[in-house]
Image (tube, rainbow, N blue to C red; front, side, top):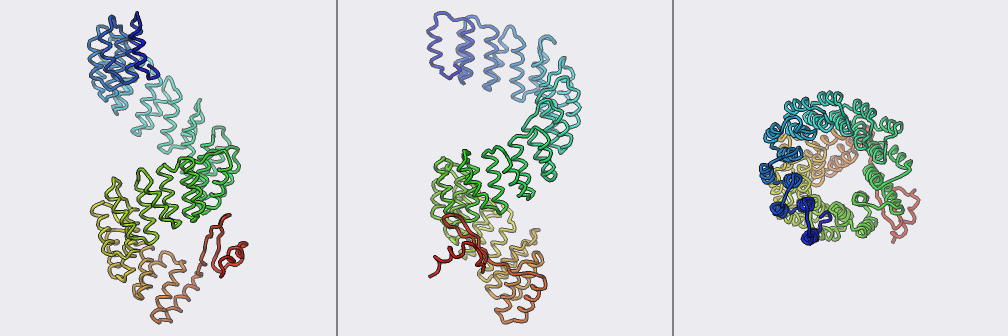
Length: 581
């Protein structure tokens, strides 16, 4: 029966010449363990002399299978009951949330001698979980022996409703404390921000819970710099690899990348999670090449990349962008069968799309058995980013017929696609559809797209009316919207609005060199050379310099970064020579 071989057990049972009550009880218990309560019921009627254990097995099995009505029928038919019988039926009512019925049965139990510690614990826990703490506390105080399980139930209930003081008082008064007693109160102190008290209590605890310790470390880092927490971990012997991983996460969040890298390379042992944290952190802090190197190191070690590894490195490949490396990573994910996970597939779609290979992005999307909103957003954004507006909108229409609801990012991609494709009316339609049908509040990103759409086709007045609508909706007009207006004014030589847009951009980002250059270009296009001189003089006076262009070139053996006009790069001649005609 324990191995699930019910039929074999039945055949053996049928062949037995003699059966005793233990044999019958074993069969009943086995039926319940294998989810066949009907057979257990049928066997009960065939037992010549069922004992109290038989009935208790029936009640316990029925309660665990959710048949409280059937359990009560067996209970009511019993001539004699022991404490196990009562506890089982009471626990059944408590589990169903029927605490009043459970309390009635508890009071019907034959006197104090008829109850054991379990009886009290079941009722105290049941009342506490239902939030009936006054009754639970009264019953707890009546307990002849206050077991740690009952104390823990009360402590957990008080913490759940924010009564941390009462939880502390009960903890300190408790006659018995176990591992869970300490863990629950320390976690409660951490949850409510009493970190010093939590640390003090943790140091007193006879047994240390690593999960609680790591939670405490994370909260300490959220409330301050990671260095003091790192120093604390160095002093105390409770850290494990999760603890050190959390410290590295804290350094990355604080922008102390050097400290994170230094700690990582000082560690004696590594695991996949720690490497994933490093790859992700390096990628997010503009050290993408270092993230790639770490991934290569993982490949050479005994650490096997998981889906988080592939997701992080594919994200780096998409941001560099580095198609060749990305394709190698995709091939490795296929070898490890992790390419079927939705997270890795989404990262693959994004990588292919950002690297310009929309054919492979679409192939990957189409091969997925299921899609989530990230999948749809990735493929729609990919088409939109490459100016393939009709294909982007076609994918969105497919999404509308799926069971996945679009979100704010979906409509950023859709509106951007309309802008690139010059679909003004469709852009208006989708903007209204987002608000009125999907009940999504437009953000600055949506307004930027719609303003850019109008601006591209010289509809400057309509674009400005959307800015007025933004203000009416209580949104602050961001620099991206004014930048879109400024770009439109450059194309369509609208000097007056262009000047307004430029001033609004410079009010937010006064050192943005491109704004000065665009405004000067607008003035030059209409022959207002005095204004051009004034803008350039203002730029020089404010100490703003034009930033050189930057390119990242991928080659077979790695990548190289170049600034515009820079011929000092070590690889300059090797890269430029094949390009010369």
